[in-house]
Image 1 (tube, one colour):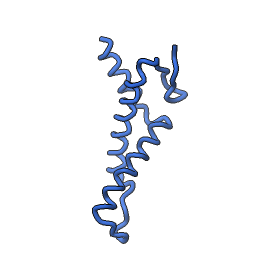
Image 2 (cartoon, rainbow, N blue to C red):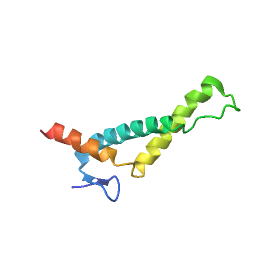
Image 3 (tube, helix red, strand yellow):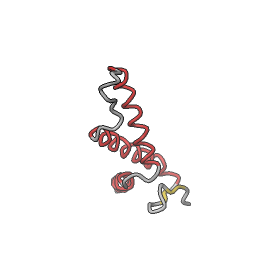
Image 4 (cartoon, helix red, strand yellow):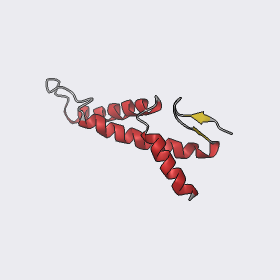
Length: 91
């Protein structure tokens, strides 16, 4: 029985694989968060001067934005990670 589809163009997974897919999505979100950081997303302009606290909270914002991107289909990395982990688990 197939229960979940991560994106219209992607795979459907069985109930037993939901934890594996969740881990794959989180890895994709972590990757995207780092890419967003490298792109300068969520950095405050120097004129605001929020200090260390502002820098800490911008990382939370960036991570949530990355999770939102992943949940809306992402870049397909979660699917690739899922398949690789599934092969390793089954093989």
